[in-house]
Image (cartoon, rainbow, N blue to C red; front, side, top):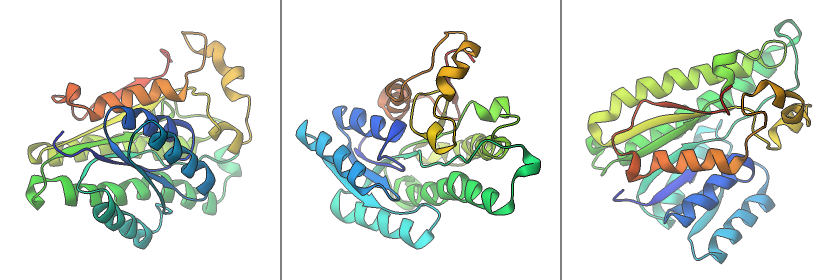
Length: 249
């Protein structure tokens, strides 16, 4: 990578925070995006700086185009030319069947998980593409094994949103492959993060671990390893890939 400035959305906790810390150790200057958890984002920045890295906490709701534009402008001014993007910001909701869901839930699900990723990827392409005077870069979208499994009886809307991310990854990868940008996705399975509690199932990983061939849930750090590899020169000939990090499930 010629440019080592990385934006990670939803990086105040879980997979995003683990990726920020690991990427910083690999030499990236990291923009740590958050929507609401400023103290958690600041803690990630402090960890990175204490280890000798560069980081900046930036508040932006990825559903808000004006906020996304301001965030990218701040990165341009304070960190430099963008070389990588991890579209990690995402939400779930309470476990429910489709016939118990409402439109407001679906709008939030797709606005954050899909529209937010599209907005951030657009701004990244405008900066990284050789078509726009950039020097290339890498985008990693955080999808989910739910896009393959469907999450019946729990989160079919979340699964549908992540299916959209898979399709988006494939299409954008082909669109910008000749412009120096690689686009891939990771599809985590049962990962032990706080997102399950926000969906009302704090013990979900433990309860479903028996369904995983490896007989355990994964960690945020294990997913981060895959993401940072996809960002790196070690993955220089890898694009349009959907990498499952799911213990075989």
